[in-house]
Image (cartoon, rainbow, N blue to C red; front, top):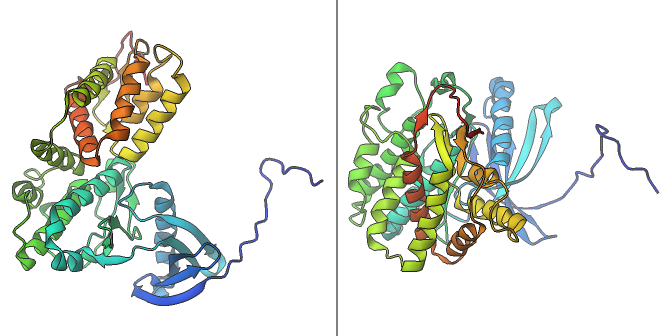
Length: 378
């Protein structure tokens, strides 16, 4: 029997895998995309080959290609395209990415034929970009061709070739210049490109499509107008804010029964009661699928207890960043009942519950400097 590999040793994998070519999908500045079929599992994939249109830019743009692979591997959201595998050949400055095949149209073409879906797609776009914002990723190439709609109505954000993960304020410098399809926002004159800039471009995209197609069914004109303002000081500052406002507006048409309200209220009371201070830079989690899955794990690990032995794992799911909290006295039954609500409630009710929870957290004291407290810092 072969011995087990030691830590740090190289494990060779058989990387060859043949696919059936179906058709060309497009050609961009960094290469071409084709549609492939895997007959072993009977599935189609999009393959993006790195082959820049200009050989003089091959080495420079290869860094963008590597960054896109890294970013796509780190994102997990139903409104962002999935990456399944990649093959890199650094010595030849080329490579391939195998991605989810989004069978459908770009958002411009989709809404021209199905204008009645504009409100749902607007909500999905806000949801997807709010997720990218929560993971500190800037897309930086927002245009109709990079927002697709599957035939089943699911919106997918694609192409993170110009994407960038933000680590500090300096990262908001406008380091790329693209041929934008609309008038640039006011902050471009100051060399800034941040999440508020992305709010502007997503809003302008919807504004353009709605105007060109004479769409009358759109219900969020006031929010869209504030997202489109050129002056960033007057604009909706984040997708997170837009998502919360959208969810609270939609809640006017949705009724919650007594048990649903009780499940939410008890959970929100416990969460907001256990967190005592939140740092200014902290973010709230927005990916409902991930939140639900992680809460399930926390519950499974303590379901036989009357109280969570330590509520830190639960709070960490909801708040990303620094905060102070109280460790004990979080009833397991409250978590169990809230999870039952999340399992059974429609997606829109879950969104509304999360938006309301974020409003609760907004009321908690914020701090900018280190503080001293008897509470436990996290």
